Image (tube, rainbow, N blue to C red; front, top):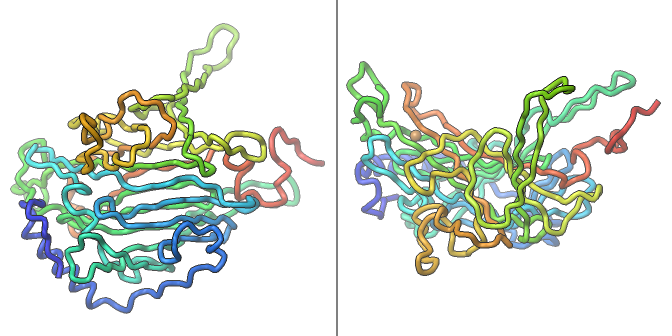
Length: 441
Ligand SMILES: [Cu+2]
């Protein structure tokens, strides 16, 4: 049976946690037989950087193969490493990331009563939940050995890898014979569920057949039953009348991405901004000008309209001779200004193996190094940039949040820019339409 050994953890919810843990344990024990792991593909051995048990390799029906290794960290939970992308027509896998993981989930309550650093302080990793086969439709549930487990048996059937359709990848009316080119996109999904107090967090990684990677945290489970004492403007009435107000709070999620485009960590960082100007004499319409700023030193940045960033490969070019890159596509965020580390949307730091969590970093990274990502932005030249993305969600509860609470998602994407010379899903018939093409008659 699971018992929360961290007596400092969430004292206000501790009693509830025990009940929830009991219920979860009972459910898992009584569940149907678990999914059988599939045999590892034989071809994977050649490209393997990890043993079969820690390898994820998926060739999607559209021809794109994703490969990676996974491990499970005692604080960060799921860590994906050595992630590579190989669309059809590419002779070998293209490395994208050395490492991709959560960097923190920071949860401050609006009444100032409490705030949580869920990964470093509240046993997020130890809260890994067993998944029933139905929670991983069409996929494989891998067994994870949880470090510092609360259980007698530290093994949890907790890592799902599966595939999912995402609707149209593209559609185009051909210019002859009423031909329609269309494809349905396919994604590899990799996810875990981690319980922290009354909440259950889904950590989902989506690897699309077009090279895009989307990472999301979904919060579900239950509202914290003990946080119903908010004053005016700090909560929302839940249940009959207005006697009980669930306390509003924020979920500030951080991801830490260590890029290695084409296998090199010496990626360059660029920021792009566009300005729109009113028409001048002789112009029929407003004009838009886009400028590039090279980011050569550690930086803290803010998302805004007409701004984006990209990581550019130090070595790799596509078949058109363009440098390969991955663009950072920020998701919807409510930035929480209450702490120094949540004040900015994006941080880029020089790699340091000790700098692993955006706040409450457990490691001692040297004298005066500080414990949070904002402190690590201190002017170092970027030769091995690490990207930290901060996506916040302000949760004002609603009646529909009970019971269970519907999953609310927050996250962002990275999308390929010039990794391939054309759409990686281009059908053979259209392969000649690259660049300034003209219709063939
Ligand atoms: Cu919430």
